[in-house]
Image (cartoon, rainbow, N blue to C red; front, side, top):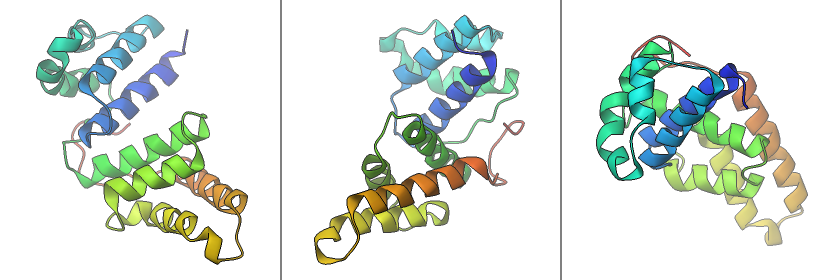
Length: 169
């Protein structure tokens, strides 16, 4: 069973990823269930965890902000820059946790944000490097190492934007 801290972090990450359309509402409900099992509890969290997969798309927008507020976590409005930055960090944590390869992280960041999100610019550049490896003297392993280093930097030095609502995470 995960610790309450890791369950809260997982719920926060899923909320951020949902806010940019990277995960489905049903994934947020699953994270809410995991949070309850880990010992977190609040009325809105229980309501969120009780949603069926069919209900998730309808109820997550209603219950998620209250659940995060009750747990003193941050709700990022859909489309907010702060939410985008939180999602970048969540994806970086997934890569560092072995859920994504470095190449997948760089590709997903580049595909989602292009070169428009300053926080993710280095990952977008590294995705470009993967595409031109046959024309330069770098190897996949070198670019993978750079992506991993950037993911570590992003997760070790979080910068909070002023856009989120609710208490900071």
